[in-house]
Image (cartoon, rainbow over all chains, first blue to last red):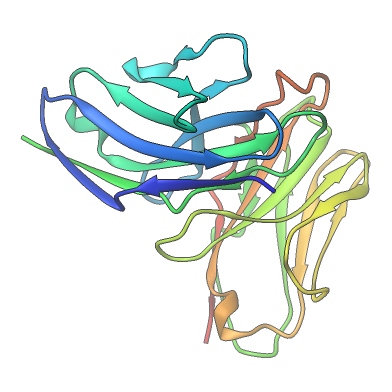
Length: 114
Length: 115
């Protein structure tokens, strides 16, 4: 079974500051890992995904995440927060080796303070 | 804009009623997944349809059922509604052509309130 744990249901950063959203995964097989963003009253949009090609994954809107197998982590970062980054972010996992369901974390709401 | 459309956007039902939610997949996509997102929670997998067949199911009772049509659009049906069924229901479509490249495209969801 696969699962993800997101540390911190709410994170506040100042505009221009580093964004760090934490995600740890549990998987019995090599995982595919994802970060999604959800703006109010909207569906989820894929930010980036890890599929074992490279451990540092670059996504849209300046976000990136690093897969660390030794730490079972896949934290999301952005060097400089923008007001438009305020949203809810979900880490998700899917097992490799077949088309399986995607399992989401509980989400982290990012607040950007001007 | 993902090209995945869901209807209706909002719905109010009473306990015990039945509801049908609809999803139109993005063009070229042959797989549809349905998720339930309760307030303050992450989406929970309900089930997935591939080429009109159910292809995986989460921990949801049989009163949650679905259909996928030849044009790959889909319905989610929920019978005997309970108060805890109140949630945002999300549909996601994907093209099952490559396991590595598979990417979910989500609609904006249907907000269901059960009174």
